[in-house]
Length: 267
Image (cartoon, rainbow, N blue to C red; front, side):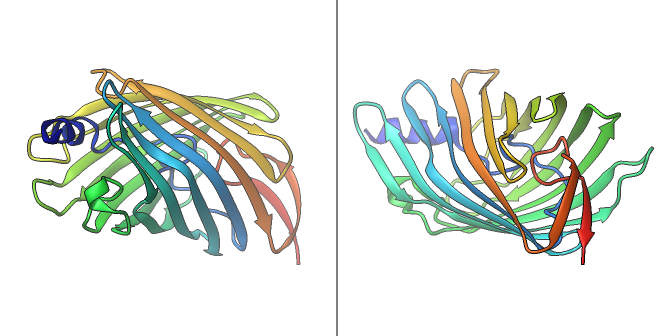
């Protein structure tokens, strides 16, 4: 039993990464000023002996000032060893601030940071939390390529304290295409280094889609795996509802899932 749990930790940590839904790689574009994004989602991964993830998690993003958003995730997490342990409960709460400090132009990408802190609210003995606060220090870039294509990605450094833990690195990139007016499709590839002393690095990929049901309601989906098969399957299924306190006339959807790109503000 103990060997099995140790093997589980070495194989799948870090397995669940909260990022730019429905992808694991994030972007520099914040929520528009005085806009809300509200998500209810499930983000899960599966390997040969276990599964873990959120079922569900609740995410809120708010545009506090132009080019800056506040961020919160409250996860209800699970960590199951097939035929043995089944754990379910509150996971580690995530808070963060995103700030875009370079605007996109015809030839220049937009650039921003999105500092995150994982608060150790999950039960570590049940493997629902890390037991120590974790901090992500990333930098993200994004560029539109004509009217249909968009790409973003970057690098992040995770500070990961705790016994047998080690700080780790994330590097990833995403490419997205506007298939129809209300449907985008995309793919990403990313690499994570080991987060434990005896752990291993992993390279993973996802295919995803964002479906705009209305101007305010959206479905987000992704599915992927890892190249070394330590993660056989990883999935994201989510619903996003956007709220604005300002009167607005939306002219064009952004290809990106996080916000709308062109908005006329009345008042």
